[in-house]
Amino acid sequence: MGAKQLEEDYQDLVIKELSEYRALKVRMKNKQEQAASGITNLFPTLLQCEQKDILKLTQVQRALDEALDPIERAIIEKKYLACGEEKDIEIYLALGIKKGRYYKKKKSAIYHLAKALGIK
Image 1 (tube, one colour):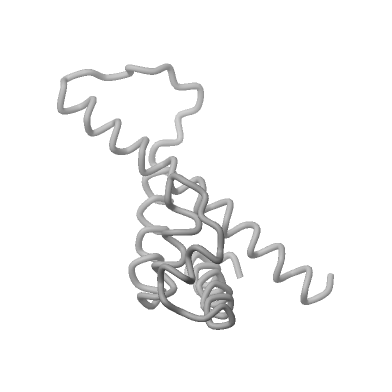
Image 2: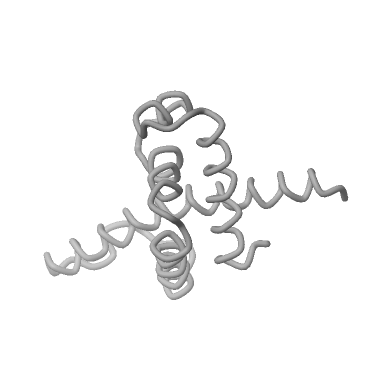
């Protein structure tokens, strides 16, 4: 496997984990809301993997908080964690950075997350 393919593979894995993180965050908020209302098992559960999900949520949050600089964090939040799908050009214009710097920061953000999460 070449270096370029390996880089694409870890990028795909990081993006997949970020997408799952967004869903896990909603799941945990829903669970807290249900507990506060005194309701349990509002929706049926097929798999019991709550501990793993909580750990994954915590570790991705830590990676976002501690492994990225502010620009990298803003790029990841706008590109992968926002509800809508923003185009790269919209993001770098909104952040006030040049196209080349945006792509370097985006690549380094994904690399730092991969490293922090043990994917790379």
